[in-house]
Image (cartoon, rainbow, N blue to C red; front, top):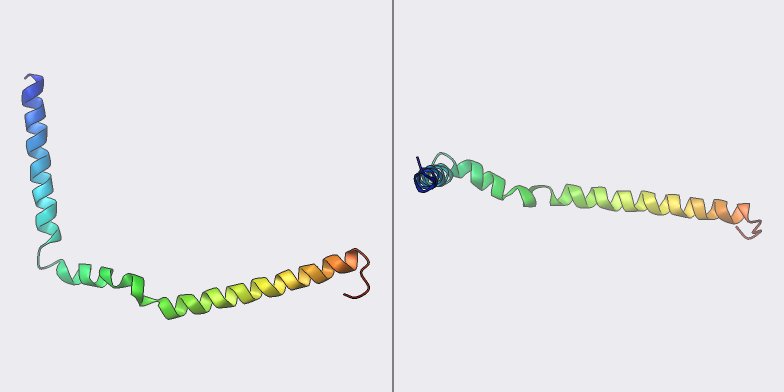
Length: 79
C-alpha cells in the first residue's frame, strides 16, 4: 500500500465522518435539544444580575472596613 492509497482511504473516512456528524446535527430528533441549548444564554439573566450586584456590594463594604482599619493603624483620629 503506497502513500497515495493511504491518503485516499483517510480522506474517504473523514468525508464519511463529516457526513455522519452533519446528518446527526440536522436530524429532527435533535432539534428540540438544540433549540433548548440555543436559549441557555438568555435563561438566567435576572438571577445572575442579582448575584453580581450583591457581590459588588459586599466587596464595597469590605473595602470600606479595611480602609477604616488602615486609617486607625496609621493613627488618623478622624476615622
